[in-house]
Image (tube, rainbow, N blue to C red; front, side, top):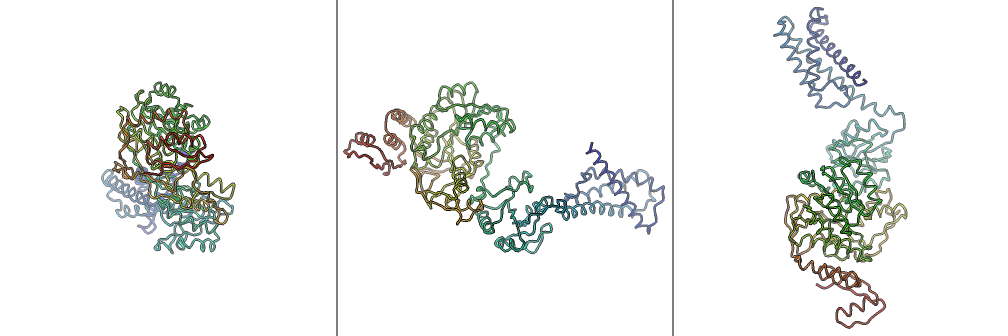
Length: 635
């Protein structure tokens, strides 16, 4: 009802505007002499009818004039032109009014266009001048970094908020001295300290959504020196989705500081392969698994099977997914992937077509002390699941691997490499098997960023294992997009690797995180603890002997190398399974090294392990209470 009343008021206002413009045109033409009543009664209804029809045709009867722009002015010109042409034809050819002054047609069109444009200009002016005055509260003085289109949109939104923009900064010299929606551009970004002090700023907004990671690091470093709160606009992807509100300004996050642009993958063919299929995600409650579930639901699968042995985490995932589109098409299973009998039942009863295997033990120090659990979960459970999936008629199986599988120094990395070998061994299967290899994931459970943040907040310090340690990083959405990209383009036996750019120094990441938390380097101590068991100074994405081939996406590479034949790999896995029941850790590591010559490790063994090593190697070694045995460093 309210909407109808508002529409009626707007329509009546436009009728009055048209009549006033027509009267003004007549008065200008005839020296302010009013038109005869007969002419007004005949021609005004025709003019109003045709003008309103044209305005409605070009969607100009909305009344939201403060949001007008150049496009709307163009539409006004087009609507007035169309209405004037229709009015001319109606009066000249339908009612044959040849005595109607021709000059009035042009003058009335000019005055009408001017009136329609004028009311919009006045509304925009009042909106920009009075937006900050209706609150009545004290305004927070803000400096905006950036003077482009995004800054203009941000300043426009700020006029309806508690923020008062006092200055803009931009490195483009041509913009300096100008104004963006009335706010002066006073200098470059390097001058943020001086400008913040001069304008008594209380906060900084960064309005450069296209800034690269290195640019964001420079900007945030300069902003940190001012000790002012600093926020940034949403990403370019969010801006394209229409998320450009002051309320959606967010704190700068680590993804902004990666040093490279986020990788965009082409997933246009994904829906064709997912829609209407039954898809299973193992490890569904983890960081990667839960994001996989969210992105897969967007592609309208017939049913999504979310499987994890962590009941509480799966419960929270259920709460999240019920809010998503197609969230009712999800079934949740609290199961252990190592339970082959139950996995066979689930796959058969649910009719699973596609499996994304994200379940794995991933924490390097924990796995180093639990070798058998890692073998059971990361290797033997995977082997059995592949067989069960094949028997159940699955079409595709995607394994999530890690860069730690390349020249592994940790047992976790070695187990993931065994998984890659199983996927790539080209065993005769009807099911397509693809492995995906990528680096560390920002924000995942147990990753470096949440640990650093907690240390800063609770302890006022950060622990870094080595000052020169580096890692490849990607965001969780990027990692999941890669998995889905691999699913769409991978052939059977492929190991696909993402071009992740340059590795990031953990020390640099720590300094950036300290600044983001509003601290200075002097306020947060960085302790160097030394590399942990199984940890490498730097990670690699490829083996030296791997050959790289392009795929349909320039950021995804296909690897190819000489790998173990399936018969040899299967025999090795059988022996490894037997050793896992009774042998020592050193024997297990030795067997894994036989299968993966690139695996290197250093391990301290006890007396029984040392004795077993002596007997198995047929050499004479003194038995010591705690013997440091370095293995796998040759070849």
